[in-house]
Image 1 (cartoon, rainbow, N blue to C red):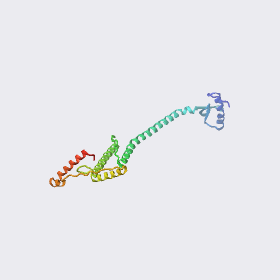
Image 2 (image 1 turned 45 degrees about the horizontal axis):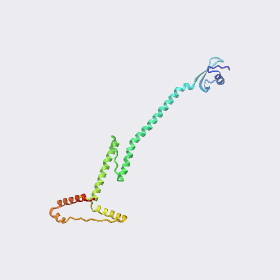
Image 3 (image 1 turned 135 degrees about the vertical axis):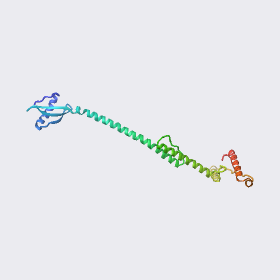
Image 4 (image 1 turned 90 degrees about the horizontal axis):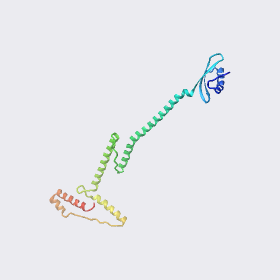
Length: 220
């Protein structure tokens, strides 16, 4: 079998076995590697003993598709990155205020008041504002309850319960530091007679004035 090729003498040596196999097997199409280049080859019989092998580089034929495949891969990678970044941003946008709200609720449970950022205009901002209002109301209510429990409602001076707690604290400190303390007892002379003559309202004013003067003179 004599062969001739437009690809050169080396290509002719490579193509000869394939051409013989075509003559033997009547094969019409094959893929042949010539000089490390893959070719799609088609055999055509033009005469009794004359055959033509039509070839096209597979790499050249698929080059546009490889470029398209690369572009699709890059677009997919960019899209996946943007999706992950968007999910991370939205997750932080939603979960961070909720996590902050949960931490503030735990702090409030322990008696620590923490104010949330309520500058957002969405539902989370409204929730933070409502939580701040609720926390402020709880703190004010606790202060009011504490004041009522340990202070006289009329004079605002420490009441008997506060007095007993301070006595217990002074006793513990004196035992620890081996120190001493004193108790000063004060009374208003003829207060009962004043109450009977002037009435409760006037005597309440007397008590308030005495309490104000005591508050200015000593630390209660």
